[in-house]
Length: 241
Image (tube, rainbow, N blue to C red; front, side):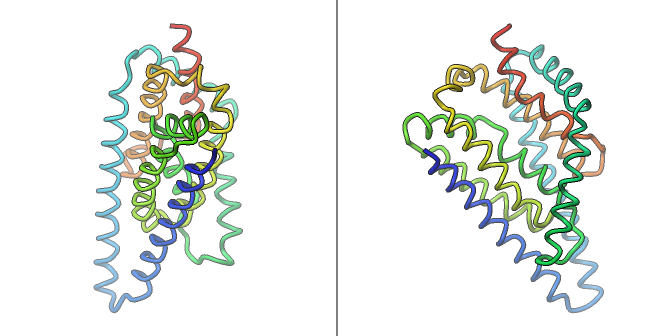
């Protein structure tokens, strides 16, 4: 029942370890200040390119929405819930805690919260996560999650080489999110099994991914975590409308 989720989680951990190794080797074998400066510029350029790809993923996913009103209301209500719970501050607190605990194993000053939030949303939001988890829970088939695992594994290499170990911690979010859907598949299928609900959830989630991309490029400082509750509201709103 959880085979696909376990595979997906493992590929993200494995990809993150490869990315961290690349990050370490790049910093370890710098031969001169000039090369170091070139490496820093190259990392900035790559990070900008990755951010543009994330922006593309966000925009293309947002276009799957069928009812603009659902997206607007989800964002408004989700923002109210997120601000009331102050999820952004709680995530930063968690990131600081993880940063402190990981110092004994990993040296560096990479912002763990940024990598964790960015990767978690990117890997968990979307039709493949929902459909694949439902499919795995209801039928035992995990072909969709295997395909997703390959994509997430490759993405985790790129992200962890830039954002650090926080990306690897997103594997926990993947396991809890997809695992919960698989275990509760019989109950959740009537609620999120329809294409309309999945498209609206993907639309709202993709808007948050686009916001992440803008933050990555330094254009905005959106508190994306405070909008995360909006991702679940289409389940209710689609049945109302």
